Length: 635
Image: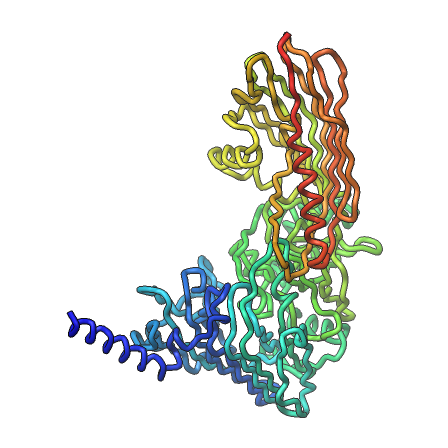
């Protein structure tokens, strides 16, 4: 036994000694970096060498220790390539927990596939990516790559911290550039994380950061991109899609993009032009013409998902979209523009960041930005915004993917930063009108009409497209406060003209009213209880954000069971504060009839971490009152 103990001790000592010598061992990572982390970035280094206006070389080294399944996304072992971007080298080495090499992955072992599935038009846009399935956790991947590109209009952003629950041991950015290209940069949130600028000269720039601890994800936090340090970079003299460009203002940049990149992409066959003219007929109103064209595009085309920047910056020819019936956001927006030109309606390509989380084009940093394209049609002093990738969106409706953000509108005379449509809080409405009946056994039956507009239209109208079992699941989750729920007839009315979605739902449930002795107890608010769970977060670090406010109003008639009288009725309630307003009212209209009214208004806004508890208490009071009970006594 002593010999066995000695042997085990010796083996542990050898393994530990080997691990101490190897930088990739898990034992080399401090406990503080592992706390709250799914992955630890041991080294994240990018060396950007801008050789000329038409040549840029980018080298990456990324060593990541993945602690668990959730940390796999931090490996980032992939590169896109196309006609203007070549991958010079790419490889990875995998190490076990003690830093022992277990797998070497050469270029031929990376998966090589189209960046866009189901499309032949984007066959030149491909991606090489690491497809490694771990045997166990933790493990470490040392990834490196080198690419060369002639496109210098887009210099990658640099994020010192990619997101929540990841820590960084060493982070290095090195950039070199000729002094005659007008290199520029914009820094975000560097001071809060002690990012060191080690070089800043006329031709070189370097930053380093060490030991950035993992940040816990906290509910209602802004995007990590708005909280954590990053660098934006650009050139005043650049090259894009085979064309040199120079721009110091958005006006000049937009004119260059329109004249040199978009020009010549809206040519259509004569047959299509004749078809469109016949379709529009004698209509003179430009808005009505636009509606006809938008409806035509929605019925004819389908969307191929490919972000701006991956599939190039130049839209494919409108004639190709016309022939094949599909395209990405650039292609479909440009195709719609070409069709509008046929009937003399002007429209402008518009570049933006498309996302449910609102992100602006940085208006004080003239450069190629954005990941999405839509179309702007002038209408007096405003614009009608067309989301040309959607086959379902109402005409001119932006929803929550492109609303309320700064975008670049590319006009013939130049670019202009414009704000897209803002859906005001009191316009994001949900109006509920209905009735429910409780019988003497406590069983529930009712009918509800829900009308949704503004940003609430976006979240509700998708229900219409669900399969029957998905619809049932949706409503059972929506009304999870009603046990034993059974759905009856459901009718949808999608009024795209007024952008209003109406749900008419019949429902029932057994034992909604709980009977105890000669008493029955049930919750007044059956249809629109606040289900938002605002967690208590001690020592919250992040500010919090309400992206979109809303206004809910409800009027519900309640039929009480015969043979019962009201013992207890909740009092009318009102709550006002910086976050919004809430009030309820219960009116007795007959001996066995009540009218329940509910009003809930929530303000959008950005708030400090110190205000989070106040918000939590506000929503807690709403939830508590939504759960108020009526007590009936049997006569």
